[in-house]
Length: 192
Ligand code: ZN
Image 1 (cartoon, helix red, strand yellow):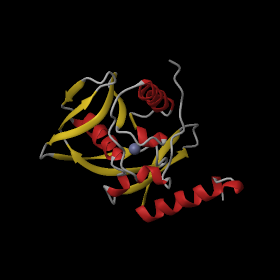
Image 2 (cartoon, protein in one colour):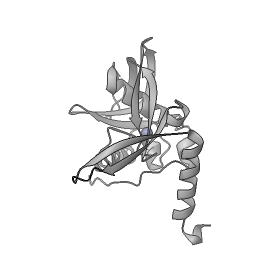
Image 3 (cartoon, helix red, strand yellow):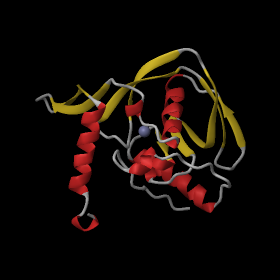
């Protein structure tokens, strides 16, 4: 099966705000989508990618963490630890932005794998964070909804040929406005 990098949709696209539908059966189309999600995630050097991010409202996400690959279909969080932890998250659908998001330290998830077989996973730490971020995408929830501690990520030349990353505090409204403006600029005149 040929894998293809699909277009990742960004903030402002209403699909990102919709709830994805459960997958009823894993057929050729779903298998192709899973392969493409992995290919697209790798092309963007991401650690996770959910189907709505490529415009498909199906409850599927993929992740890669510490050399392991995860494909979860119809994931359900069955249990969340009381302990929470704050960490900086980016999102391929909100490029150039990071947010400090509080997540459950551990969760237990049931899902189907790429073959349609039931699996149960108990990720902790960063993997638990990735899973919670991606499952949020399946419900139309973005990091902007989870935190007020938001930052623009600005790469600066240090003068010695190196780049340094600087985080500039911002707000949800400023981010929404910037992406709306960007959307207007990139829309072709014909589509207006
Ligand atoms: Zn995301």
